[in-house]
Image 1 (tube, rainbow, N blue to C red):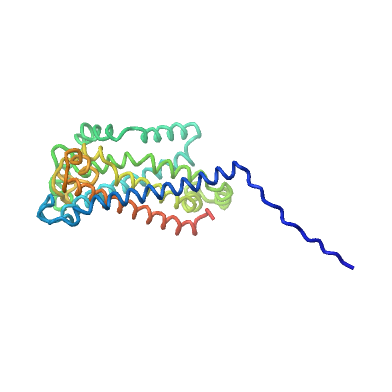
Image 2 (cartoon, one colour):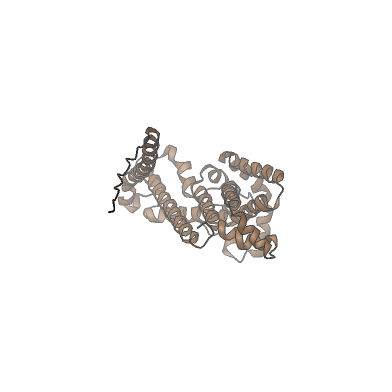
Length: 310
């Protein structure tokens, strides 16, 4: 004769601390979504007059699209140049700190790089206008003389206050973000992966190329997109450096504008339809930034399947 024992499920007791922490976490996540939705609704409502206005009443007299596309082009070009310049340097610095430098030297260098993130953008803008632009002016003249047949270097500015100068200053500004994220990701590489590569006869660079970089690539992409978001939204540094003017593909000539600099320079005195135009331009920048972040999230999720993270 066999007897069966029925187990009575134990009642899970949730502690008050767990309930409070869980509720706070969910509330914080929902709050972010509410704020994001509120910003989107505000920008959309305030921008409607600019979208529906008579094209002759818009700033350039040809409609909102013809007004905003030069600003979008200047913003994207400056941000892409900054990202292309800053990313290799940041990844190289991160690899040096994490896998080449002595611990004391690496921590000091990392601290110095992190300090760049604490420098106000106004300081970067003043340095870019007063020092960096002046140093680059002779180089722009050389580019005009030797590469003037290309539309990007057709005419060099004597002051150096150009879109290329603003892009290089942006590269310096986003360098700490990309470096910090890349460094932390590289330090998380499993030690066994690195030792296995070295045990198979790989050099240090081969070990980094086969073990560290594949593992850290999603993090590098994420850090790069964070830097790109900072470059897209940077206002004061670009507004101080750039000489206002119409859009041109010439990177070393005067002129060109970005959406943040356009808003910063004109918002205090704007009213009526002009204010709606600036808010509509901000809405366009909001959509671009959101699209960049969603694209970065897709890339990171896709690459994480092939990295050592899983």
